Amino acid sequence: MTASMWPAVTSALRTTFDAATTVDVFDGIPTTYEQLTAGVAVGVDAAYDDGTSGNIRQEWRDAGPAPDAHREEWGEVVCTVWAQSGDDDLEAVRATCFDILDDCLDSLHTIDVLAIPEVLSVRGLSTAQPIQRRTSRGVVCEVAFRVAYYAVFN
Image: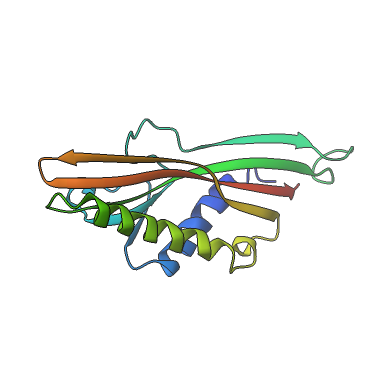
């Protein structure tokens, strides 16, 4: 019996986003984040890197002893897309960042619920937080977003 579907969902998101985008996709924050022009980080808010990777809530669905009883799980995985440049063209960087986000979210609508039978639904964008700023290396746009899922398993 698994404690949660969250690890499997996180891994499946990384694989799915990697296939859907032309940028590097990381399991967690990359060690060279500031030097990358664009990318996706799964399981981390790369803008703040505060250790918050998502959340999990479970309830028992039916009576009975494990492993026969089923649990319902609602979870979220924090992800970040970003784009940056060496200039001040924020409009272009923002467009690139949201194009990457579009590719990630579109990929969640074209697959069989992450190919995990226990995961019954995925909501590609439960919340998002765009962040734009200027740095010494130019402008950057980041979007921290949460992918929500619902699973039933025992």
